[in-house]
Length: 75
Image 1 (spheres, one colour):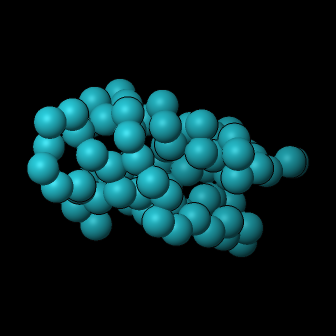
Image 2: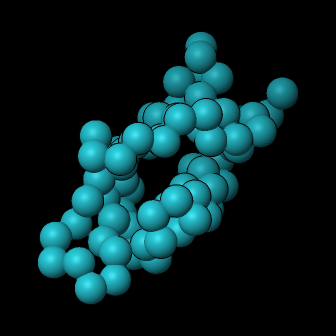
């Protein structure tokens, strides 16, 4: 079964960060495809509108379906 590319994962992350915390501006700090587990592990830094400082989050995304399996604010 084909796995999501990094570009596809970045779109999933953008959609989820926007929906979960209302942030449009984010940077991916690290992203790793763990093929044995079948997931992408992604760490992001995002800034909410009018926030003085950025916040962080980690996501675990299914590598084939794109489903967000875990979202944790403040790694």
